[in-house]
Image 1 (tube, rainbow, N blue to C red):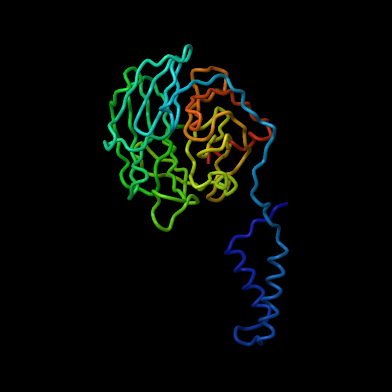
Image 2 (cartoon, rainbow, N blue to C red):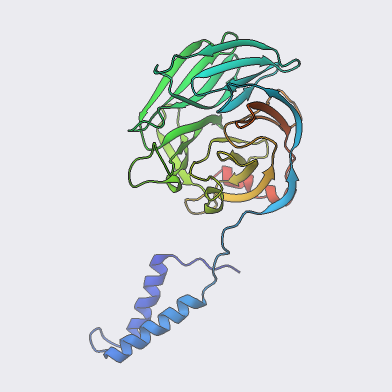
Length: 318
């Protein structure tokens, strides 16, 4: 049985030990030292949480296809008939069946679009996370483009707020978004990648709740941060770092402020932004990228064993 002792309980325990010595002020120095030593022994006897570590359960994604898309150095998005390559300030559209390019859109260098990140398709709209990274102070926006022409149709500035927006999705009536900090350029003094957080926001982008990422996942990010994420059909949160060919599965914590780590899935794409193919009914298909190979990659994601999914529903309802 795991015992959870918070700071207030610990202070109560110390006070109880002190009261055993009689009225305040009457205990000798030796008595106080003895009480403190006894208190430390009691603290040392309490259960210790296991050290954070990445766990693997033999989960490996199956590659379904890959296409050369030079511009896709940030992310991929997908709908029923097309996939989309996302670059810093470039969008391209390709047919799924043939890989043929059918549209592109380019923002001029030095223009208002600085750094597209992950995106997803909703109806005939391509919704994109955007930031001014690595400029300071950090500012972010949601940019919406028409999937038919790739022309911009809406922009929603999120203004100057902590971190740079790397991905944003809709889930259960809220916006869920990651604001990243890095260990190099583009981060405010006094912060590093450990300050990267997941936030839940209402329709006016007021924060409702937020969580930090688990330390064992942060350790895989190199000098970067969480680049992609979205909720799965199992109620768990799937995320990627910047370079590793791994998908980190998380869930909302039952207590505390840090997301709970569940497992790691080996995938053929290499971090960055990605999107579920929601048109693949009954399947779990993701479109991601290999930045180094300039490719968009489709992969089938295995379902998690029941024992790993336990707690996801309850956590999402807290």
